[in-house]
Image (tube, rainbow, N blue to C red; front, side, top):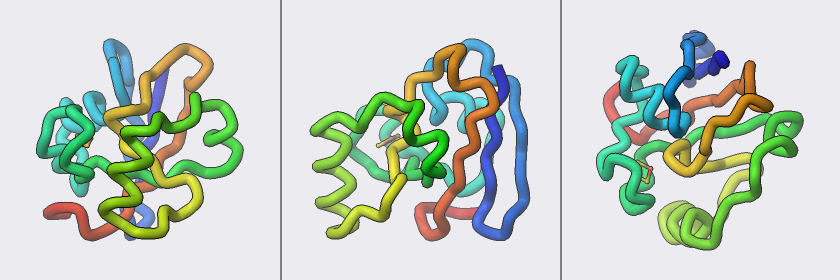
Length: 108
Ligand code: FES
């Protein structure tokens, strides 16, 4: 399956996501900028945020309580579609998933 990350400036990178297991793992394996993912997927650093468009958000399992707690503790109000990419498990039905990287969570 393939997965596309879009930088804040609009630059897009499409990657082969084979092996997942999460969107964060694919991004870090390919050195996608702007997603430092400092905790390595433990759901505690909140430096792996992505924004998911409505069409794709409907296909993802909803965020878990821990994920939402971390996002709201960090951001206050959580923008619609905001997720932690380490909590997005990749599955065949997500082929073509597009994730937008918000700025300000690490060196770009
Ligand atoms: S990698 Fe740390 S919260 Fe996702």
